[in-house]
Length: 435
Image 1 (tube, rainbow, N blue to C red):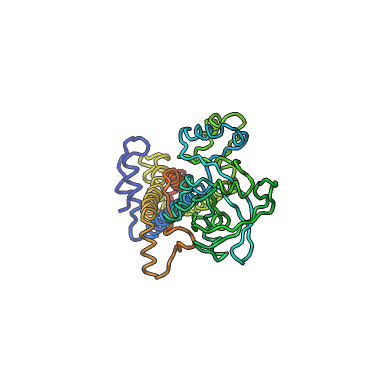
Image 2: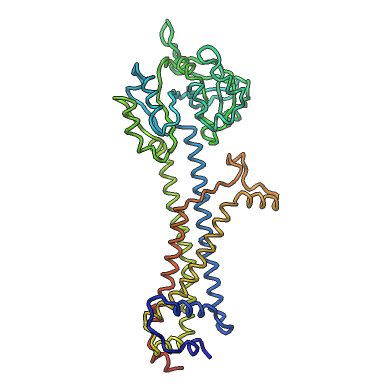
C-alpha cells in the first residue's frame, strides 16, 4: 500500500501550511528502504548545510575577534580623537585641556609630541623611528605598554631634571639593536635644543633604557621610543610646545558623534580628527576583507543548500503517482507546492539550526579546543610570541549570527521551491496514464 493510498481520503478544505501538509511532507522525508536514495540525499543536504553554517559562523566570529583585538591594541597605543590647531599655542590651553577631559565619554586627555628621528644602540647600526614625548602620569592611558612594564620601570620614567634621561624602548627595536634594560641608546635631534647661542642643530644625546615595552603590535614596538614630555620638548627644541592633544574615549566606534562636543570644548580654531581618519587605509582594508569573506562563505552556504534541489527532484519523481491521486481527491496545486516546499525547508531548517548550535559551541569553547588539539598533537597551534596572543580570539556578533541564519533559511527555501513548483504543475491524468 502506497503513502497516497493511506492518505487518499476526502480532504477537507484547510488553510495554507495546515497540519496534514506538514505531516505528509515529514512522512515523505522518512523514505522506505526502496527509496533510500532520497533519504541519503536528504541526510547529505542536512550535513552540508550544517557544516557550511558552522564554518560561516566560526570564521566570522574569529575574524571579528581578531579585528576587535587588533583595534584594541592599535587604539590603545594611539588615540581615538586628536585635537590640533590654535589650541596648542593658546595661553589658555591648560584650561581647554581640563574642559576636554569633562566631555561626556572622554576617558583620558594627553598632550604629546612626536618626533621622527634616528637612533643607535652602542656601536650598532643606525635606525629610524619616532620619539613620543608623553607626561609620566599619562603613560597608564597606553594600556598595553603600561601593563608590560614592571613597577620599577614605571616609577623611574620621568624622574630627574626635565623628566630625566630614562626612556622606554619597544621590544622589537631593542632586540634588533641588541639592547636591554639599563643599556644606552643614542638619539639624534635634527633641530636640537635652544640655548643662549641659538638653536643647537644636529644634537645627539645618549639616554638610559629604563624599560622595554610591548604594545601588542610589532610595528609599533619596532618604531617607537617613549620619552618624558618635558625632556622631549627640551631635546627637540620644542620647549612649551605640544604637537597634538590625544584623547581616548569609552566607545571608540562612536567617535564621529563626539566631534562637535570636543570642538566646542577645545575652543575657536581647534581642528578635530579621529582614528578612522588616521587609520583610514587600515580601517578600509578591514571592512573590505569582512565583506569579501562574508560573500565567499555565503556562497558556500548557498552551494550546500542547492543539494536540497536534487533530493526534492528525486522525491517528486518517486511520488508522481501519489501526487496524481492526491490531486484527484481534491488536493490543490498550491497544496502540492507547499508539501514539497516544506520537505525541502525542513532539511534546511534542521541543518541551519544544527550548524548554528555547533558554530556557537565551537566559538564559545575555542580556547579549550585549541589546548586539547595542542595536547594531542604536541604542536603549539597559536604561538604567543608570534601573534602576541595566547589563544585564538573569537567574538560572536549577534548581528552576524542573525544574518547567517536568515541567509541559510532563505537559500534552503529557494532550493526547495524550485522542484516544488514542478510537482505543483504535474497533470494527474498524464501521471496516472503510465501507472
